[in-house]
Structures are given as structure tokens and as C-alpha cells.
Amino acid sequence: VQLQASGGGLVQPGGSLRLSCTASGSIRAINNMAWYRQAAGKQRDLVARITHGGSTNYADSVKGRFTISRDNTRNTVYLQMNSLKPEDTAVYYCNADLYYTNWGNYWGQGTQVTVSS
Image (tube, rainbow, N blue to C red; front, side):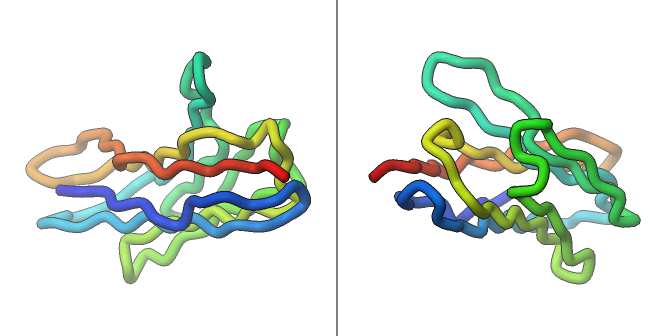
């Protein structure tokens, strides 16, 4: 089982980026999918989470700017990030609760997002 994240990069303040994360392998089911981020020297924090049915919750710092979505047919979760700020700079990690041989929690490899002029 593997979670492959992509879409990070360098963007100016006020710009947008879209992150994607696809789960692959012999996956039987996926429950919650989420994005976390970790800035340099800080702990890893939840950014947004989405259930299999599409219910979402967000960190207060990103509400109204970020949107999490998923495509269950493709085992993929997305994070649309708009109005980016320098304080959004971090490594972004996808996370998912997957049923492989049993239920487990899995992490992607991380993708760097840098917001700077």
C-alpha cells in the first residue's frame, strides 16, 4: 500500500495550488482521508479531513481558503489551496485510514509547499 502525493511547489502570496494524493495497492476500503502539514521546527498539524461520505472539517487557519475533496473511484484526495499566505509554507502530508489486510493508518511521503515572493 502506498500514498503518493504531488502538486507542491513555489507560489507567490495570494496564489493557488492543488495537491493530489492517490492510494495504490491491494486496498479493499478507504475511510477518512486527510491532509496534514509540518512547518520547519514545528509539529505536524491537521489541515483538513474528509470522510468516505464527503463530510469535511478544517483547521481554523485555512477555513474559507482551502477545500478538501476526494474521488472514491480513483482512491484520490485533493486539497485546493487558494489565497495562499507565507505562513502556509510547510511540507504537506496526506493520510488515510485504509483496509488492506486489516484497518490501518497510512502516510504519504510529503510534498513541499513554499509561499514566497
